[in-house]
Image (cartoon, rainbow, N blue to C red; front, top):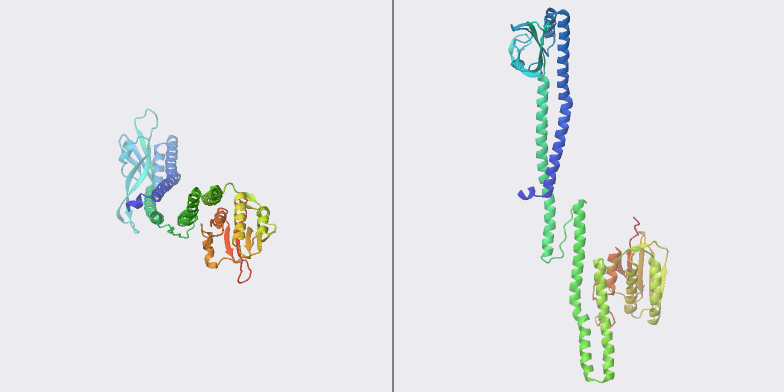
Length: 474
């Protein structure tokens, strides 16, 4: 429970509830002032007006008329309270109250609230009890002349018991509503906090498992589609990237012994033998060593390129590019090499929209695909480079050959680093060509697909297709 109370969600909920309660209280105060406040002012105004009327009557017709009018009004006004008292004797001359309220003695000529008793009667007119009610009134001195010793006290009041009862009920409703809002806010805060804490705990458990070495763990998605769901999706994508990089590192360490240690061993043995041989043998050893060194440098450069592309650094600035134009340029560079290797390189392009990408990386991917076809389409004669518009509005780029192809079960593996289906590894290469193509595809959000090229049953060929998404100009 204490953990729930310390969550940010619970604190935000409580702050929101307090602000909402304060707003409701302010609204209640405004409504109260506009209803009961105005009603109280109207009551005071009516009392003042009635005293002024009685004062004018007293000045015009004297005490007798004043006594008669007060008696009449006391008789027919249920909510009106009146008293006419002769001073200084204190005799009650007229009215419907038996005694002057004690509050009148200290109120001077200001308004004051007081409680009076009114008998309760049944339907037959019999008194069955006493009802204590609240009223508001004002007392005024009437003198026939400024220096007269005798004067009259005129007391006028209005019964406000019904209004006060309604006001107290409204105050009770407001207090209960405020308490209910606070209680509901606390419950909602606890519910929301528990829900959020459950999802945060799922993230923490996943992070703890990954920290313990299990890179396959992912945050479970709830399908809510909210910001936490989007965060989980992005975190899972980040974990996929981390797992992919870590897997690549393991693959590098697993294959580095054969792909880099073997050239180093050859270099060492070759130089050892050259020290004992003549100049001609030394020159031959140096040339062979230089070739091995260049192959190792090419391997390291390929690894560095893949790492930079997958980290996002090597992708550089993405601009709208024309894949058909890039394919034509790369094909022109590879056409002499294809002819020398006995292949017919054909290029098929159709009008297609631009894609957002890096010209250098896409050129490198096409070059790697063509180089891969030239190396491994053994006994093949045709290589086709195609660029066209996809049904989804994007662009398809494919390189196909009529070689022996790749078994379907092995296709997912040829995209990994240092994977070469040729177990003898006699063909020059590092096994990083298609890995770099896959990295370029991921950097551009393209989908990579490997399939048969549609050749003969014994020579199905191989087709590698990159499906680039449509260019979003927003």
